[in-house]
Image 1 (cartoon, rainbow, N blue to C red):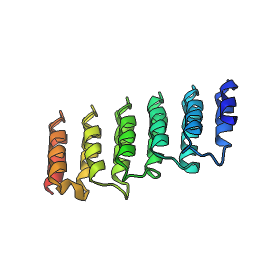
Image 2 (image 1 turned 180 degrees about the vertical axis):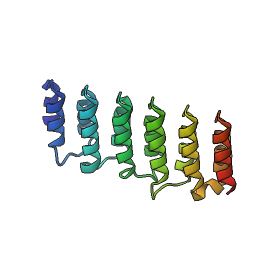
Image 3 (image 1 turned 90 degrees about the horizontal axis):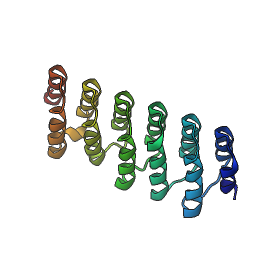
Image 4 (image 1 turned 60 degrees about the vertical axis):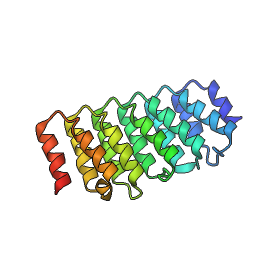
Length: 196
């Protein structure tokens, strides 16, 4: 009922305030989940929507469906900075062993229009203690989309410091991603890092 009433509010600040005041919310309930994320989606302020999304991470337990909604809305944010901030925070809360949820995360990263934010989030994901082979593969797929040689190179160099680069599948994708670099110096840097 409270979530439904937010539709009548016209101020992003008011909607955000109401959503951030909800301490116990069962987002595993389909009805509550839909109403909650519909309310966030109705917000036109990236700052307020981002604030509520970060609040959601800290205060509400989410299932696969909730995470899917979370990443769909995060991917719709028009501010790369806000999207980057939300995705960076999400890394600490994500069940990184759930490939469906990880796929949702990377679907959201594909919406970046900023190489800087996209690259930063990928490097943060690589630094996660729960980083695994599947995520390494997804990071490399995502890095291919970066048009900045510097950002792409930085992601590859960071990934080269992980154990997963020794896996034949990851090493092959690493090299094919390196070949998408259009800078000779960046290409040498990422290939040399692999050899070191």
